[in-house]
Amino acid sequence: MADCPVNHIAFIMDGNGRWAKKRLMPREYGHKVGAEVFEKIVDYCAAIGIKAVTVYAFSTENWKRPKNEVEALFKLFTDYIDNRTSTLMKKNVRLVFIGDRSAFSDDLRTRMEAVEAKTKYNEKLLYIAINYGGRNEICHAVNELIAEGKKEVTEDDISAHVYTKYSPDPDLIVRTGGEYRLSNFLMWQSAYSEIYVTDTLWPDMTEADVDLAIDEYKRRNRRFGGL
Ligand code: IPE
Ligand code: IPE
Ligand code: MG
Image 1 (cartoon, rainbow, N blue to C red):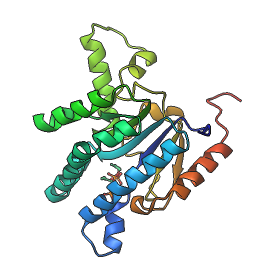
Image 2 (cartoon, rainbow, N blue to C red; image 1 turned 90 degrees about the vertical axis):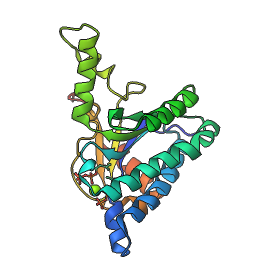
Image 3 (tube, rainbow, N blue to C red; image 1 turned 90 degrees about the horizontal axis):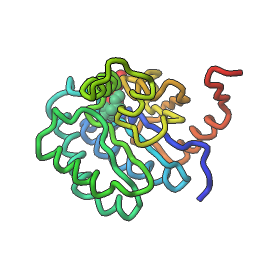
Image 4 (cartoon, rainbow, N blue to C red; image 1 turned 120 degrees about the vertical axis):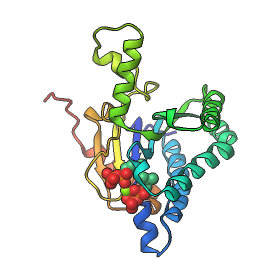
């Protein structure tokens, strides 16, 4: 497998609603197609040698949406867990959910933990962010440190307690749907990530669009504050 310069890629999968609206379809339809595209893109990232993929599926702010839409999204998440565990095993992918689970039902939490436990020793990493907020994550990390008895915390302490502690920070964050913002995604981890925004709506995302983002990444000069 070719060596890809990007070790960890993250996607803000935005634009499902607009994609559906353009087709005079309900927003939920956009999410359904978006979920299919998510699998295609994650497979492609693995195929080109990317070791870790993070996808933003539901933010701590997305509860503001109509109940129907939220329910449809959670149905997609549950279906994914129920139907994809063996596929993840076959593809050697470790699945880790990132975000605040306290809002979920016991049943959903149990299912999440089961797929995480089952895939724990797989080599590639897939983080799915559900009820994820970057600020929430930093508070969660600090609260864990306080519970451990820390009186003062270091950057390394926080990096070791964020939900994505199983991998280095993302090299590249790709946002579809054309908005130039992070929307509370990976606030801690994105300090030196390269950011790539495309107008492509998530359900239209293709392997070629991933190639374009990586080509652009290769042209970036990552200085990390140096010269
Ligand atoms: C999907 O895109 C991302 C989620 C929050 C699930 P949107 O649903 O935000 O689509 P747009 O931005 O309204 O087009
Ligand atoms: C960001 O998209 C969250 C996800 C992709 C899950 P939003 O559609 O919620 O972001 P805003 O509202 O445009 O900032
Ligand atoms: Mg959106």
